[in-house]
Image (cartoon, rainbow, N blue to C red):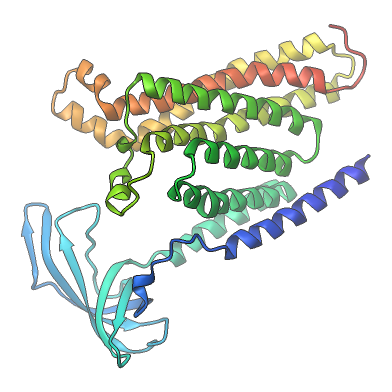
Length: 377
């Protein structure tokens, strides 16, 4: 049996690696053709000229110029002048100083001479790679082979969202159907990678998929009852201005609620099924009813912490909005009725309902799937 399980896992991992490789090279279909005579390069800031910057309170307007040395691309080693336009937005603007690394867009004329250089942002790719590398090393050190499979799951999830989910939604496919398909595929693949082809994985998959579907239905029902338009999402209106007028933003918003909660649901499902597997491995004479009862007791504690974690995660992203309301002395009834806060309440409590449901469902399913010893109902 062990050999068969290992063979299944090897075949599954090889297949997943092939899929990851395909997704890596797969184009999204939305590459910008107007950047034909431009090139993105990394550059080092040699010196800056801040004479064109004008301060208005905490905001800065104008134009910062800099002498930069190109470090990548076809013009590597050249030094040119680049511009950094400031708009007065703290979330968008950036100020460079000598020694900084910048991501720069350079343009060419018909004779292949550089005719402009715009400083897009600080260059962060190297730091991001270091952080990802540290994460990968730490998880492999502490989790071993399971850590490697976790990284594969992480990569597959990221590529599936970037190369399948987002392009499909942009092309006008039903967001809820696309999200359900991608979400369920990710749930199954993640649990099989983390737990292998085992009964605890099967129990977690059944309960996680079922409860995720319930959260999707709840997101649709309460999203309509709350009368919340999908434009409440950050950047949603920018999609319309970019020419994607056919997008159903409300369905995208509801699909996002489902996807956000599905990750927490699969996490709790595998936690409970793994705990019950340990119980049955160490108490072979335990009855089915006792095993289910143990799962329910475990779930009571875990659900409490998981729902609070979900609340922290959602509220953390909206802490500044809450601060604005409090600073303005906005009445609590106004806050609770505001579209942004109502959307977060919808996010939080639909996800929490899914978590509450997955605990007993995983316990019951695990009680029927695990077969060791003789059960007495």
